[in-house]
Structures are given as structure tokens and as C-alpha cells.
Image (spheres, rainbow, N blue to C red):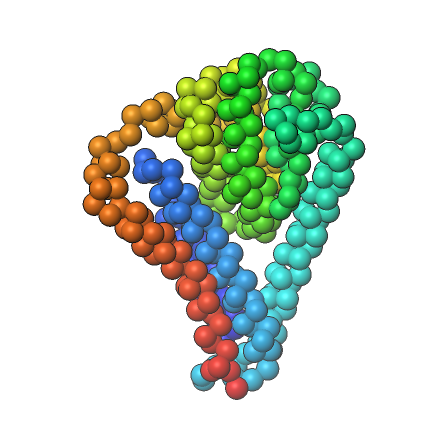
Amino acid sequence: MHLIVSIAILALAWRLRYTWSETGASWSQRWDRTLAIFLLPPLLLFTSAIAIILMGPHGRMVWMVNDWLSYNLAIGFLGLAVFYWLKLAGSGWRMLQQVRTYPTTQLNGKSVRLLDLPTPYSAQIGFWEPELVITQVLLDSLGTKHLEAVLAHEQAHYHYRDTYCFFWLGWVRQITAWLPQTEAMWQELLVLRELRADRWAADRTDPLLVAEALLLVVQNTSTFTENFCAAFSQIAPADRLNQRIDALLESLEPALDDRVDVASGGEDRHRRNQLSAWAWLLLALLPLLAVPFHT
């Protein structure tokens, strides 16, 4: 019976991933949908593995006898997940220790780490309490207003705890690399992370300043892995820059629908939509409902 459940969950996970596609909706709608389809399949696999281990290799569920094969596969899957987590956490910890060896300086009343690179660069690096890293070249390249826009972008990453969240999402990416569209969805989440930070910075400075600063410091190479690093200037793949610039320019002209939505109680509707967008988490608990039927 365990094997049948495992095959059914695997088929459902594949099916869910195949349903995802990039859409032209707002960044918040894209974020909710992509995150849901990115996380639901692995969560189903995790709860299925836990349910199988709780039921054990012996006994019956309904009318079918359980088996050792699926039980061992469940243990193997969870063991592999723990291995990848430890490996990723160790890599992030070593990176953070390296960053903490960099000299510090005060910038707008905040302590930042100075990175010795010949290119303009800034990023939040770490986990829950990341370090802000910046190069002297960036300080020399930007004026006061553009620098404020860059710092506001990085503050957005700190506010949303992006380095911490993407550590966990990066772990999910590793253990589900064999599922369809994992890499495409990962890149989409990275783009949406930057769009959200750009929007935060634009609301506190000016959209044109953020766009101009981005064009001044843009680069295609990654200095640190994006699992633990949220960098303002990182725009690979190539279309990420276009998406960010277009979104910033569009924010200069608030849509009529947005103004009407606010006037007609759109905030309450947005809150309800957010709750419904996360209702899918309940589906991940379905495999655990099989445990009481095991004897």
C-alpha cells in the first residue's frame, strides 16, 4: 500500500510542476503562484515520507499489506534531504565567516562590510541577520541619491529576510532538481525577489533613481551564490534587467484599476486573496490523514 501511495504522490508532484508557466500577472500574483507550485510538491513528498515512516513497514492499511521498499525509500529521501541541508548550511556558514573578515565602515549611520573588488557591488549576505557588503568602487561610482536608492533596495532584502528565505528555497531546489521546471521556477523566484526589493526602494526614493542606479552598476557575473546573497546589481539571466527596468517605469504610472480598487475596499480583498493563496498548504497535510487507517 505504501508503494501505491508513493507512486500517486510522485505523479501528483510531477503534474503540479507541469501546470506552472510564466504569466503576465502582477509580480505579487506571480510570486504567490510560483511559490505555491514550487513548494507544494516537495511538501507532499515530505509528509508522505513521514507518514510512511510513522506507519512502519508492517501491518495493513485498509485491505493492503505494507512493504519494506517504500519504507526504505522514505527513510532514504529524508536522509538525503538532511544531507543536502547540512551541506548547504555549512557552505553558507563558511561564506558568512569569510564576509565577517572584511573591514567595516559607517554608511548613513549603519555598519557595512567593504569588499575588495574592482567592480561596483552591494549585497546582503547571510541568513536571518545578513551582513551588508559593498565595494569602494560602488561608493565612488554613485552620487548621493543613487547610493540611497541602492541602500534602500538592500534594506528591502533585509526587511523581507530574503537571504534566510532563499536559503530554504535553495535547499528545496536541490532536493527537487529532478522534478520538472525546478530551475525555471527558481529563476522566476529570483526575479520576483528583485522586483519586490526594487518596488520597496522606489516607494522610498524614486523609481527613476533605482532604474538609473541599476544601469550604472549592472553586471552579469555572480560574486556569491544566490542562496545566501541578495545583490542589487546581479541581473543574470539576461532578461532579468529588462523585467526590472520595465517594472520600475510602470510604477511611475499607477493603474486606474489600482486607484479604483483602493477606493472600493481593495485592501480587504487583497488580504482575502493572500489567505486563499496560502490555503494550498493544507493540501500538503493530506498524506498524514492515512496514518489513522494503519493497523
